[in-house]
Length: 164
Image (cartoon, rainbow, N blue to C red):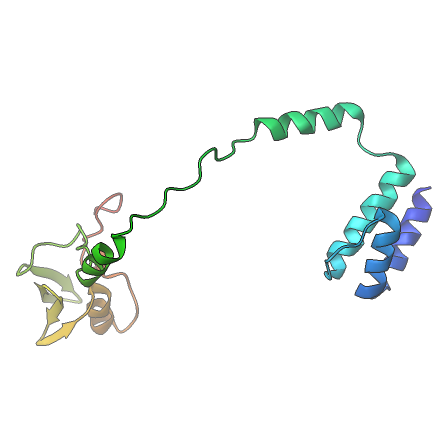
């Protein structure tokens, strides 16, 4: 019996998607909207094998039903957003939250790099280094090193779990 299934699967691989959909309808007794050739071949091969060698045992079916019944399902739908939320979110979007790893505005970050002491001033809207304002610490670090690197790590402001 195994030899016939092997031949059937080999024959299925030579069929096109339309022919596989017809074969699926023959084997399962219903049509499918699927057009994925690999999926169709696998499903048809599984069904042919199940018909030839037998399906799941009754014990396996009961166990699968038990597992499905114990699955954690959402019992309540997500809460709807308040009606006045667009106004509040527009105001919040105008002022992005400040990263807690950053020092206060006006602070100066100092870092020794390749024998030079580099100083970067923290501004409300960016970082000043050698008279140029950069939008992020990573942009400053890239200007200094010439390659992309994480600004927090470069200036040793890693914070949680990354303190040095």
